[in-house]
Amino acid sequence: MLKTKITEMFGIKHPIASAAMGPFRTNDLCIAVSEAGGLGMISHTNVSPTGIETNYVKAMLKNLDYVVEHTDGIFGFNVRTSRVEPGIDKLISEISRHISENAKLKEQCLYALTSAGSARRMPENKEFQKLRDNSQIKHFHVAPALWLADKCVAAGCDGLVVNGFEGGGHQAYERVGSAVILQQVCQKYPEIPKIAAGGYAGGAGLALALAAGADGISMGSRFIASKDSEFHENYKEIIPPAKADDTIVRTGNLSIIRMWRNKYSTAKGMIKSKEEKIAEEQALFAKRSAMSEEELKEEYKKDFIKNYAIYEGDVESGIVPLGQSIGVVESIESVSDIIEKCVKDAEIALKKATNYII
Image 1: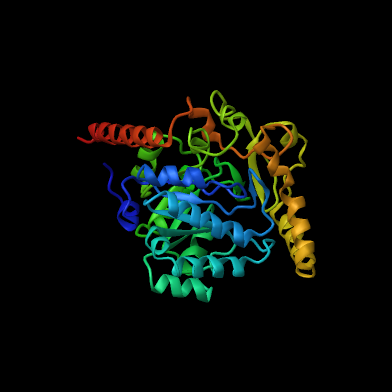
Image 2: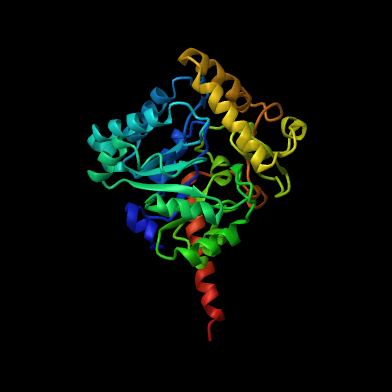
């Protein structure tokens, strides 16, 4: 077994977390990871097999209830705090209140992860402050660049998800690789708990991250290619035998995004500069601020319709987020087998590494 700050903080068996995969629903995957002794994740859900979720608050509360009914393990939830996400403060308040009022949720939902925006929005929320003061919940934020890690620490985060550019989904314009950003953050903040993300898909990666100073890893693409994830088989079967260079980086809704190289992504516009993207987001925020609730729902549908295709098995016409770690995934297995092998291989690698010390 591996004992780290993450296993100690959350009372879990293994230092392995499931990545946030919004806008997709990942409830079954969350349950499987938690049941296997890892840290499961309820993604910020806007799209599910039943359609596009326009009532995002209702969808997230339903997710929480579903997961806590099907596992006694520890898990968490993700909220994207981008300036263009409507109703985020309300969402944080409702989730916090819902957890506070449910004893089992309060005991098991201990990992609050924010991403794609400000690290301050959750700790500044009054309902979350109440929950934090009266439970063991910990707030982490995704930090894909050192200056963002600085902001997370200043915001009072309990821990960081240190995300490298190899990962799937939305990424930072700084384009810093996993090994470098992890070293940077470990040098500057050696004591804060850190989960390494972006490019990790097995035991070698877990050993690498722990040796570099992380306290665990987060895996996305590896868990998509599992028997327990709710994604379509066509999506899963892309991953083995994919190569690491079968992904492409293009402009996404919130920033740049790494996704599968398909008809949609190859036709997508080239990456805008960070400054252009921020200006675009500010204009979009101003536009959405003037919209009614019904208009926002319609806007939401336009945003996420391109994500829905993969639920129908169409892996060519829409966004298929995947990271470069697909190049090391060789098979589709159960989550429990993936985690067990990951830990066993990491233990072997770490023990082998001690042979170099004389």
